Amino acid sequence: MMVLRESIIMKIHYGTAIGALFLTVIHIMMRLTQDFHESLAYENVIANYESVGYALLLELLLILISVHGFNGLRVILFEMNQGPTYEKVVTVGCLAGMAALIGYGSRTIIMTSMGMT
Amino acid sequence: MERETGAREGLKGWLHPGKIGKFGIERLAWLLMRLTGLGLLAYFIGHIYETSHILDGKAVWDKSLEMTQTTEGHLFLALVIGMCVFHTGNGIRLMIAQMGYGIGKAERPDYPYKPQSINMKGKACIYATLGMAALAMWYGMAVMFA
Amino acid sequence: MATIHPKLSDELSQTVVSSTKSVKIKIKRSNPNVNSEQKFDDFVVPIEKWTTVLDVLLDVKSHLDHSVGVRYSCRQASCGSCGMKINGKPGLACFTKISELDSDTVTVEPMDNYPVVRDLAVNMDRMINNHKKVMPYVIREDSEIDAESGIREFLQSPENVDKYIQFSSCIKCGLCNSACPTMAMDKSFVGPQALAQAYRYIADDRDKGKNKRLKIIDESHGIWRCHFAGSCSQVCPKGVDPAMGIQLLRGYLLGIRD
Image (cartoon, rainbow over all chains, first blue to last red):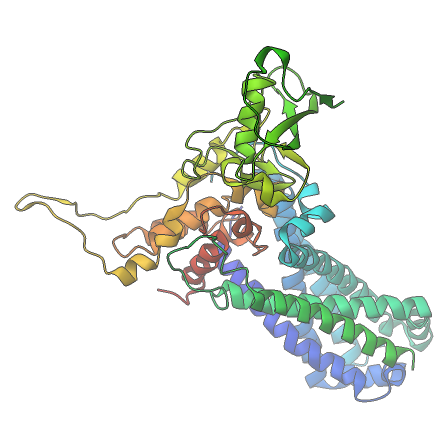
């Protein structure tokens, strides 16, 4: 099962890594701009989500890490076992996992940023 | 490409500590890269689930935060910080090397044939990454235990 | 269970022994064609400071146990036949001196990641097939045979030769594939030997087969399954440095090299 050439997939892998790195740094800095425990207080977190810029950052971060993480998992699983059926299951499974995680995380981001808590 | 069968070392070839002794710090970095990758993916899935509790109101959010507000929880988060820093630092090293930088220049080999791609720059980067991961863990613990 | 054999057998004790030193060699024995049994046989053999692992094995074969299975030919690290695991690390038996191992006991085993034929001899079909897959020859449409002028040469500058000459030293001993962690699990991985050879021909300015080779290695068990553990380069007895070749080769697929 080969939808994209492996070199394209790996370019995406590298690109998502670099993107995720920068966004993760911002995400962590947001926790450290105030007292760590205070930054995680319910009201502060809600305020974070309700900021459109930060919500977009979280959404992008979610997509980048999910793509990078599940592709990394696919690579490791490909190296652990081989065979057409196995590889098809791994590819579909990783894509499904990636989509499910992005979907589930997006639900949290969208609903919270829209005040549906 | 044609599928081929043959004897393989199996997981021992990945995890046996003796491999690191025989093949050096680069082999340790290779192993840690995948272990930290798997660990970070598992943490990320857990993190997405944990943060979804924000939708269930303040009481549920506070309760879910309690899991990581313990000593064990802080140690776990410190480990995540370490994994994250190592995976990032080593990933940058690999990307640079995989683009052909810092691995030497092809030339006529001379005895005793020291491989140029396995050089002190690469080793120093791995040690520096391990050091930064340890430092980040220490800083993370200082913040969380404050 | 290990079997300790005498220093020299009674029937063949006429060998002149000038050495005062000896080494215990543990040889992994198996014959998958007969049964799945694996054992180590121990032999004590006299050595000099120049004695190689292959010398010791041939001493064992000549005087202690004729049945030890070992493949060898040139005895000078040119043919790539005597690859084996020596004290846990892949190496050429003819290129590894006992004195440099700094051990009174030397353990020899067949190379990892290859099916064993018998004792220390392994089946290298997988590596040879992968080597062939990357088309290890100069590809171009014109020929060195010219209809008008007879035979002509494809000229090349010394600078251009330097770009690939290192990788043309490969003797197909298979040590790199034996050390590679991906090869330990991935039976479809093309392997460092073949990838380094793909680079050797792509970097050769006489060759026009770059796109064909890149297409072959740019698949799910091709070049991207290398993660630069570098073990292949550490064991290469000829300074080929397959890890460098693979990283340089990746540059073509990443679009940072023409």
